[in-house]
Image (cartoon, rainbow, N blue to C red; front, side, top):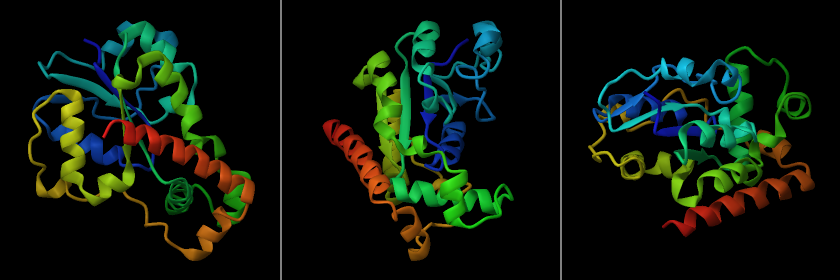
Length: 225
């Protein structure tokens, strides 16, 4: 048994919520833990090892939540070689909010003790918000129709509607979400501090690049509406 869909990224954009929602849905199966890391770190183990994560359940939609996959440009070709053209879900967050959420998450979990300016200079992976660069291998390998490109703001504004769209993409029944799934899962504090935002947006070159990648992803979103 191998998956017929993958959540490929990004983090800090509702991946834990999606894991909870798909685990609840009776027509879906997702691996209980995120990140098998098969297509990036464990590819040498082979498809037989990977298939051990997917028991025969009779589910229509079988997949995993793996927000690392977008980071490696070789992953799309590996997925194509093992699974063929496969449905992939990518949900993006407004770049400044993503940056700030990453910082707050690291601080909250004791992974970083410095201020936001030190985080931006020393630890933040700037390629993580170059969205079009990350998406390009998947667009080429799978084709646009195999990609669900979502926006975290849409998920926050209307979780039920967002999940209906996910269900349609995965060809499973669009069941009403239980009340407990009408909010965020595992959310960091909402990064709306003006001081933090100023640090993130201080560099004009960085801000321009973030906006250009965000704008291109928005165009892809609009193409499918």
